[in-house]
Length: 276
Ligand code: SF4
Ligand code: SF4
Image 1 (spheres, rainbow, N blue to C red):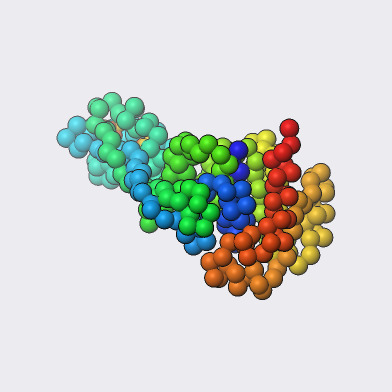
Image 2: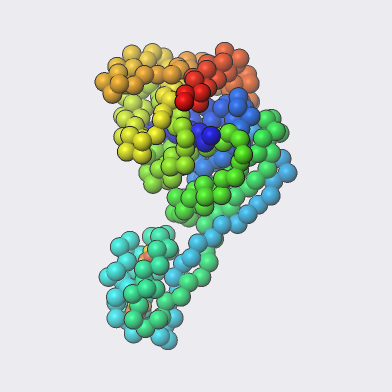
């Protein structure tokens, strides 16, 4: 069972819920918030091994290039451009699609491996289960590729909790795709509800089962009414509490520091897991 925890809005409490679910279900924790992976502050991984991740990147052989410009026209990401009969690559725009090499009439394009990030694998000092943490290289725009690389290698025999990236971009979709169940963390504010609705559209397109949990709640009326319009309802609501902030600032997993929240989350998600 793969559970992906996502939230349209950043800062909604996705990592708070994901680390709690990893604790509750003794699950392997995949941190796919690769721009800023911070689940480790709560799970405290030990004995990590590191795997480097790279991607192909085109390289132009100037002695073979006739400066015909075919590659610059065909690249739909505008990653290649021509100046004074020289072809240049904007690395951050390249998606390693291989098309330029295919269309080059002179065979002037080859590929080199370029680093995009690394994956650290260890065991949580708190839950004992595995932690797999994606770390995107600083300045790299290949977050989606790094997530896809990690997702393709999921090999955990038991329950997996994926802590996805915030937002509703390709990176978030890459973290949602492998899920058997999506836990959507919603902040009950106008901004949070707006972004949650975008995520729900994605989940509908991908035909994913969803459990919706309100976090930092000071009242869920607007949220529940918006969900009711879509035939959905909240599975749990976590109130905004100073004690929770203090626990998180101390690096505590919320479900470990608050037994009531632990039961609430366990019931909300287990009910969905147990469905036939
Ligand atoms: S590999 Fe694809 S995205 Fe990158 S430069 Fe070539 S055509 Fe453009
Ligand atoms: S398609 Fe090949 S020959 Fe033409 S400009 Fe690009 S690299 Fe040079």
